[in-house]
Length: 327
View 1 (cartoon, one colour):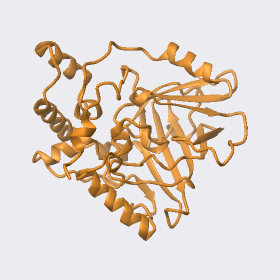
View 2 (view 1 turned 60 degrees about the horizontal axis):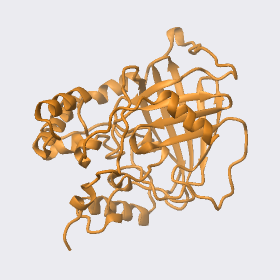
View 3 (view 1 turned 135 degrees about the vertical axis):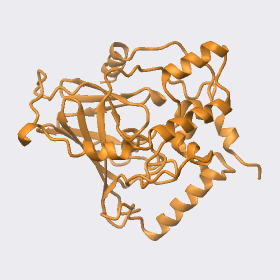
């Protein structure tokens, strides 16, 4: 299976020339590739931090109406309410291969979805951003934390702004792997590749990939803990259901400190309404952290023209030191 993953990467991911040394702002909240490429050619160097802030501010203002667009897409149905009839692969899977990305992207917050660029725009005096919560159950749109967990999340949200130790910074901002629900909502899209009895997800961010077996094999032993957990999947019509256990509890669900524990059980449902639209829904059950299971949802669209770039997050990374405050 590992050989298949590397083989898939060689066949499907187009490598771009290595980019210059970058900052967190340029990496996570980058504007359009054309804008960056043009600016770099003109200046012959990296965008300055000041220009990065100006660009992401403009992006934040321009993307503010996306919440209404996502609400409309969430109601997409096939004509006459009939299920979409996709092309089938040799093993019977619906063919959904290609690049997909969230309509309302960003993992800064679960209850007010936005990107880091959106947050910069607000800090620079842009209009306040208020978007519908990703959480659809409970109905109040809030994560049902236990009291101690709610206090920890608030502390982590504050520590993100006033970090004095590296571990107080969002792990993904330190180039560590994230967990599946958050990866599905990043500003950068992901690629789906299908092979007999398996589905593979690949991100250009963090060199991340995820192999989901469909052959009915059991989960690995409970003592093994992984950043993205141990996934097992199956198809229910045009819905890919992924059952994930064995997470290590180190990844976060958002920049502002939403988290889960090693006991989390994650159930994802990727429902393909048509060739261009998919609804991503995930339910998280973690009795060590939450008072009840809860569900969040995002609409994804096919990104046929998206160009994958190699993302060398660790190489040349300098932003962690800049995030720390002197004691």
